[in-house]
Length: 208
Ligand SMILES: *Cc1c(COP(=O)(O)O)cnc(C)c1O
Image 1: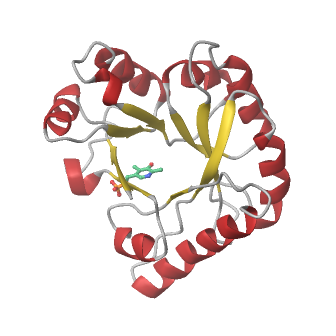
Image 2: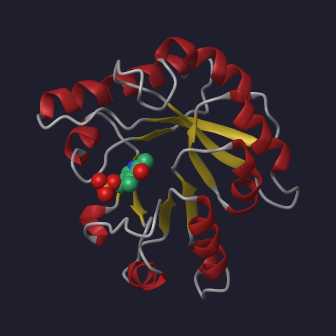
Image 3: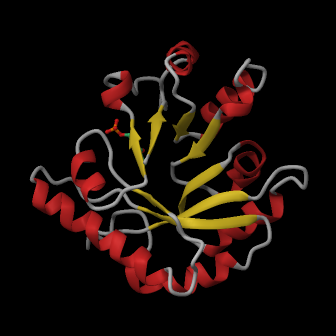
């Protein structure tokens, strides 16, 4: 299992400290901020060991910056975004690793696609030349009890297993954050996305 350190809103110095402690995978939510960090660390001594994951909502006018700077995208929820990322991925970079974001809650307001739309979107994206479909991601509705947390994560794990019959290369389940990582790991997470528990509480005062 991989630990993704979610460094959104955190300064360069916090990432430097994490790298010095042996952490090499970082998650960012905001395109501009993330690109600045990727560029900053491209001249770092350990640049080749670092991997950068985009985990936030994606507007179509931002896909080029994501395609040109990140190694992974966890938050794909429509074919249009995936097609742009594939078209805009530079030829001299390896294919972009992508995950489909699933809405495991019934709330319509949550981002991510419904389970019933998963197979069609997966088929379409798996055929795009500069992307590699690696798996699924979700941010379940907040629940404070372990059993509800586990149930949401298990539904994602089951969906991935089912989809693997057609797409055997799927090997990734991005699930679990600071408040629910134990349940996510028990349900089979392969990437936990941890911000607060590593870097402390975030300050959003400079974000709109
Ligand atoms: C901010 C964020 C995280 C990290 O959340 P914490 O509760 O701070 O661990 C994980 N995943 C996504 C998609 C996020 O936006």
